[in-house]
Each structure stands twice: as structure tokens, then as C-alpha cells.
Amino acid sequence: MTCPESRILLHAFLDDELDPVRSFEVQSHLDGCPGCAREHAAQRSLRCALRDEALYFRSPVGLETRVRAALGTQRATERGPGRLGAMMAFLQMRRAWLPAAAAVAVLAVSVTTIWKVGVPPRGESADDLGQEVVADHVRSLMAGHLTDVPSSDHHTVKPWFNGRLDFSPPVKDLKEEGFALVGGRLEYLAGRPVAALVYQRRLHVINLMTWPAPGDPDRPPAAATHQGYHALHWTQGGMNYWAVSDLNEEEMKQFVGLVQR
Ligand SMILES: [Zn+2]
Image (tube, rainbow, N blue to C red; front, side, top):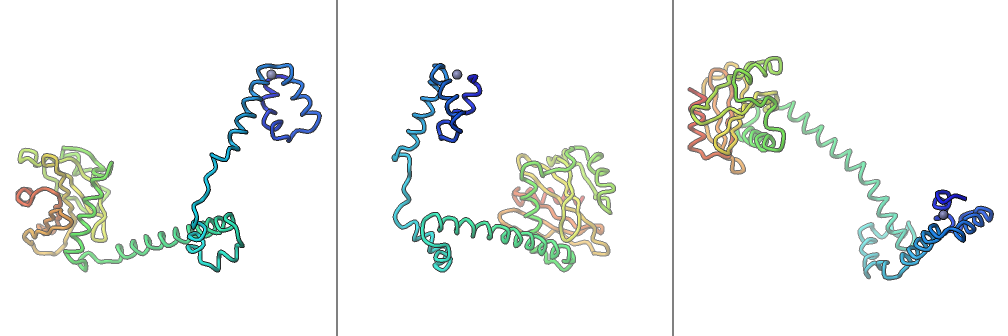
């Protein structure tokens, strides 16, 4: 027997799982090979160490009672006595519970989606829309979601929406005025895809959402605050506008004035 062969069989040898012939071959090799004999001795002392009582953790008094209480007495008696039985029942309950939870989550998402699609844009109050706008704004600030087309050039950002939206959003370059264009992305708002233009003022991000409001008269900006974010919305030239940021109200109004100009 070679050393690699003996090393492969060593664990089975220690567990007394080899047939007598194999076992004899390993023992003969160990008798004549100091290297493998050392490995054998090391493995054996490791096994002894692992049997040490100090390594075992006794469950605290009352744990079984608490697990049983969580499962319900009936279930616990069904599974019979013993800690293993209770634990298995607990694990099985979790396993049964997980697909159900997943189904509920999928259903909730579906219902939300149907709800969102089903809501006509005009049926939604400004307050609901404001919360939706703020939620979109917050989501956009999460890593990698701010822009689909990162560009400070409105000649790049505006054409990017061609073919992605059924309208062409007005895109203004306001860098000279201190509001740098950062880019644009598609957003889903008020039950439809809208254009989101992203501007930056110092370290503050401003999202400007735009979509058509066919036939609607012009309306002056109205301010709202949701979760500490300032949102201003208005209608101009047959377009809806929502501007949202954590920027102070004064500078937000300045920004809106520039967009409206
Ligand atoms: Zn050997």
C-alpha cells in the first residue's frame, strides 16, 4: 500500500469501517511508515479531543418548554417526546411556513402591481402622488439607481428618452445657474412611465419627474413635504412636473423657477 492510499483509507480505518483484509493492509503500512503513523496518531487524538464533554453545550433549562409552547402543545405531542422530536417539528413547521410566506409575498406584489396599474393618474390625489414621488426619489439615491443615462449634456439626455417614452421631456441645462444636470432615467409613476431628470446642487440630488398632462391648464407650483423631503408640483404647457429633494425650500423654489422659465 502506498502513502496516498493509506491516507485515503485512514478515516475509514479509524472508524473501523474497513473489511479485515483492507484493515490489515492499512495497519501493516502504518507499522512500517512513520509519516502515516504520525498522521494516524494525530487523527486519533483529534477524535478523542472532539469527544471531550467540555465541547458540548447543554441546552438551558426551559428551552424545550419554550419550543413546545411556540409549536403548540398538540403538535409537540404528535411528534412525541424528546428534544430532537421537538426540534424536528419546529424545523418542519418552518419549512412548511416558508413557501406559504413566499406565496403571500408574491401575491402582495401582484396586488400592488395591479393596484398601481389600475389607478388612473388623475384619480390619485396630490398627496398620494407626493408620497410616491418621494419614495421614487429615495429609491433613486440607492446605489446604482440614480441614472440610466449619466450625462451632464442635455443633448445626450433628451434623445436618450426617444423610443423609451411616448413623449419627449423638456431637458434644461442649468449648470450656469448652479444646478448641474447629472443625467436621466425612466421612472414609473402615477400608473405610467415618466421621465426623471436628475440635477445636483452641492451635495443634494434633485429629481425632476415629467410626464404629459394633455388638456390640463397651467397650474402654479404647490409645495408639499413628505418624510422631510421637499416636493413641488405644477403643470405647464401640457406637462406635469414634480421636483423633489432634501434641498431647502428656498433653493427648491429657485430651481423650479429656472425650470419654468
Ligand atoms: Zn505512509
